[in-house]
Image (cartoon, rainbow, N blue to C red; front, top):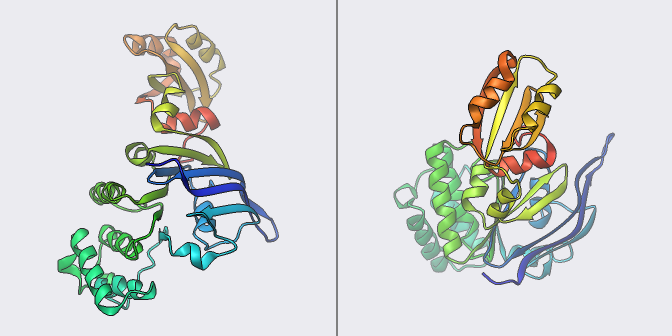
Length: 315
């Protein structure tokens, strides 16, 4: 991985006009290095897909500058598209064509000759374990298979960078794990990957660096390890209370030596601890009859998001 940025975003704004204007992206600055697997993590509606849409020339920004492979995507969109592969959030395969035809015609669109396009299509079908399904139509495919075809098509013209917008949304766990293996393989082949996701485990498992985005703004950007280390908590105890007001309980819990911080949420309290040995019985004892339920979680990227915003990624 080199330090030269393949994606450079400066002061990006995007406002959707209408009766009530919506600021989808608010002054985003971001840089993705060549060879990096970079993740934009955030809840639905945070601005992830809008940012990707601008980077991939599908949407014009309100203001700001975006470069991909040192090309201004706003001034020279056609040239920029030669360097990028794009897998949007929704299935865009041609349903009137077979799997083989979807990839073949993509190659021809990017200037491949007939024999070269046929060879590249066969290579990709083999790479993604789709050779036996080449004559199948898109409508016959499961969600996981269709996503593999979309990725194969996206890299058919040998792009420098691959944009994946919510790649595992709607997939079953087995298909999601298979997709992760495909993404790792592409990264090993030297393709830079920028993906958006609202699955914290996906970003944690795959990405070299992660930017957490919410309400159109980048909150933090670092490696998953550094972001989790910054929380300064090993475990998080989520207390669901019978009484809404847990301020008195929070004050008592805060006095425990292992408790780093206590924060409230809609159903109770989150207790961030620096140690876990023997603390659960004490938390339960202090909460008493007010405790309706309790769950224990390891520090994760969702923990980072909660610390920054006070709410879950899924909210």
